[in-house]
Length: 301
Image (cartoon, rainbow, N blue to C red):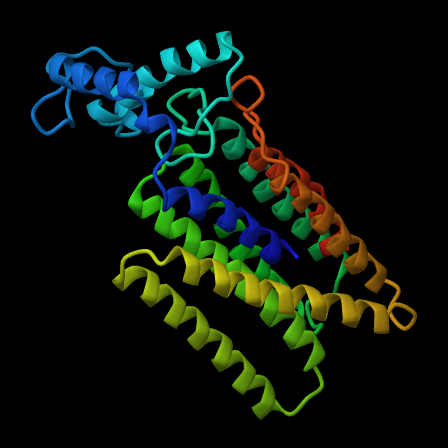
């Protein structure tokens, strides 16, 4: 069900990315950014006129104009908090976040890496308890690689949001969404004719290629991306639950899949409980990343 919850994440993020943020519209904020850019930045807004920023910001390629927006955001936020007014959105992000060592959303980075390591640790335990001759062993090995790649790019994207990291995050997320669909389909078709299984594999491969090329060759269509992930995720989650319920007596481990789907569904409620980040670091989305990590235990069980 990870794929379904990733879609919820994409739903929340892409809506914001496609619309102007309220915080950016304040005249005082806009004036601050203009004055800062004129005073600090070169004409392209990329480099500083003179060295004045931390080395770590250079490492993550933060442009001078982007740092001006970041620096001008906080006086605005502090003023609103002092007046007990709602905190608005800035820079296309859901909430303002305090950077840590140059990382844009440090909590989401940390918890994405936690998911990465949890999957790798559980897969290592998985390998110790199964026979490599089992028909689905290679499938689950590949599933781990796809999941690890997804969580890696999630961490990179939350660490530094650029057009490239956004694209890689979306493609990697869809890869995990679609491969989860393939795993349950593979399990259902395990004893089917080889032609049927190969046809199913080809269809899934073509679906991934088409979706990736669409994102690569066109301007981001967030609605299309969200809808595609949501549809595949819903079908996958439903198939997982049906298979687990039907086989819970014949295969005792099926109950773990039920726990996994339910756990991930409950975790997704955090995506609906949007609120300003605690300590300007922990928002609902980062806590969703934290809540998904333990569910890898049930998936590999």
